[in-house]
Figure 1 (cartoon, rainbow, N blue to C red):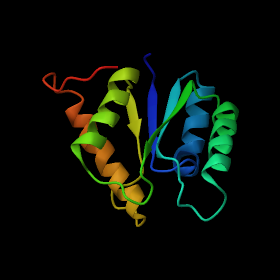
Figure 2 (cartoon, rainbow, N blue to C red; figure 1 turned 90 degrees about the horizontal axis):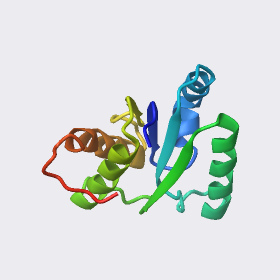
Figure 3 (cartoon, one colour; figure 1 turned 30 degrees about the vertical axis):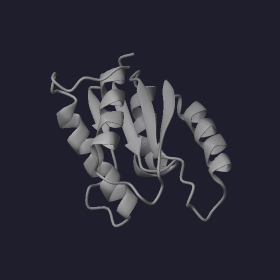
Length: 135
């Protein structure tokens, strides 16, 4: 499935807080968008991961995104590993975006910064044909 925008967030709600306005505007102009959450946000102190899942689904419907996925990486312990990079490469190859959005690499929250670096590295790796992925 080809999409115009593929937006990654370390936790459910990060995409909405960081670039929700941009996504809403682009969708209103006819662009398509997919959101990928890296973790379930299970270490968050405001609500449960189940509540976050419901809220993420509601938010996706309100924004009008084409799809939303969660990679279920370990909240609080994101690492720039081959395993995690390959999971993100799979998403990039699956959705073939024109634009990739993520948290800032220098974000003060460790998961945001590590997640952004993971996404940045995976964008490069997704173009290497010798890295095989099964979608």
